[in-house]
Image (cartoon, rainbow, N blue to C red; front, side, top):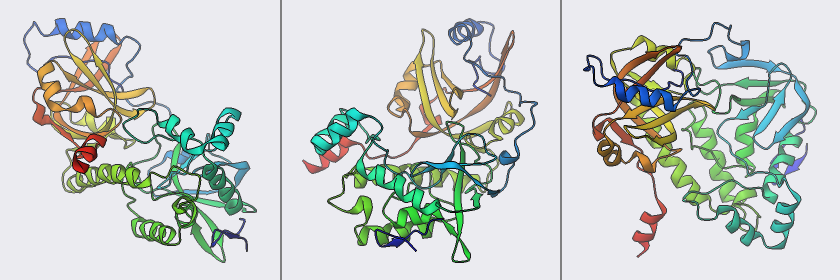
Length: 376
């Protein structure tokens, strides 16, 4: 067995271009629609599902399968590769710090680490990711954990959340250690190589294990929790932000468990669900990706996967301002509205039009300005 920081780690719509008027709208409305579509030529994606068969790894279910590790399987502390799966795998519920990827960053971090971190954050409202020595350590921890393993078992947290924003498979990774399947994700948190990462929601299956693992690592001052570690050092701020997002997501999921008109845009079959509810009211949970202003409307794109989103349209710019959504780029929101379709030429798109600010629900997030006022 190999010891690591007190923990054993034996080696082993389619983006729907824009939209139209309300159902039953008058003949004047299409003038605005045409402006919107022309502004987004090449930006839309067909609503209809692809006729290509889904990959075996993308079939709905908790178990993805058991795989041999790829040659040089560890990309970093929270990303691995296995044989038989295209691309890398984003490991769930963890977010290790980045490796130092350039000579300039390595030199700046060695010269004055606090100044280096300050420069990386700049004037950003939220904490940013950056390469750190503790990120290098997390990568080495992962290499030690997976070293010598014959098989890795991949499982999902939610059978309908299959791939992330960048198209990577989302999974928990398990290795056989001392005769039992052991979660790398949990042990990474226990070793202090990552916090319990809740930015995109609490773990459905391993919340207690991850919470206890983080508490143990904090108490023992392991890894990122060691005051002398060269890491982000701002995890109280990060955790407050992540957990506020997770609380918002959990409240939506609670409603979705008892209502079939609540749809998470990150589910692989979300577009098919929206298509089935054409002309009906739904509530969508998603992250704001882009906000674009045009002469006659504001288009808010809700994130699905990179290069693909779902449009929410504000023809009333006062409603847009009063909704507060302009502050929520890359943050979770919930939108209530009627699913509509717009067709023009080869475009066949879905969307929701927001007429009232009350259709938009925002997560109650901590903002740096709020903390400053409280301190005063």
